[in-house]
Image 1 (spheres, rainbow, N blue to C red):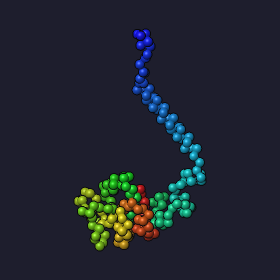
Image 2: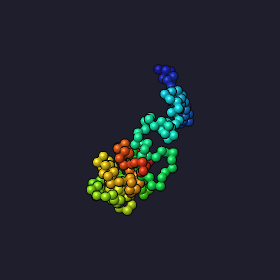
Image 3: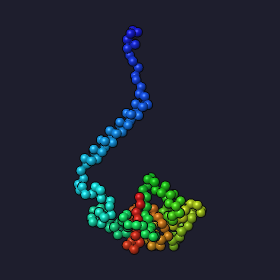
Amino acid sequence: MEASAATILPPRRLTIKKRAALGLLASVLGFVTFQNYYNSISLVDDSLSQRQLSSSWIERHPERGVSAWARNNFRPLSSAPGEKETVLFWHIPKSGGTTAKSIYRCLDQTIASRLPPSVSRTNDKELIEFKPYGERRGTYVNVDMTTRSGMLRAEKMGLVASGKADMLFAMDLSFAGEHLYDKEHKGRILG
């Protein structure tokens, strides 16, 4: 019995250096495999691969996927920002939009967004810039950009034309783009 017990060896443990080497090897193999897979994908139109989001490509192919409101009411990314452009931020819930609002507030940008009813001033008859949380928490415009009725109210009051807001935060990008911007008051889209 004692002889057979002596022949059973305990499992060998890998040292930290060996674990690191195996991890590095697995990472390199994973990268090479992904790279080969990515390079083997054939696109329907190979000319789209590098220029798909290029504004010059969009100008040459307006029928491919760019809505008329986006072509007419917003500046291409290749052009320099204008002196007073109102930026439309596409706010997708649970994807960092609230953090973006906080950052732009800290940058002293005037924001058009939804506010809690306790501080909201959406019943006012004219556009007003106000500081609902005091001097250190940012400036807002009294419109609700989360509903279509709020955006129509902002359109009727001439929000973009007034230049009172630096940033608009809206979840319905196409509705906001169609109703708030025009050829004379172009903006940019962020998301």
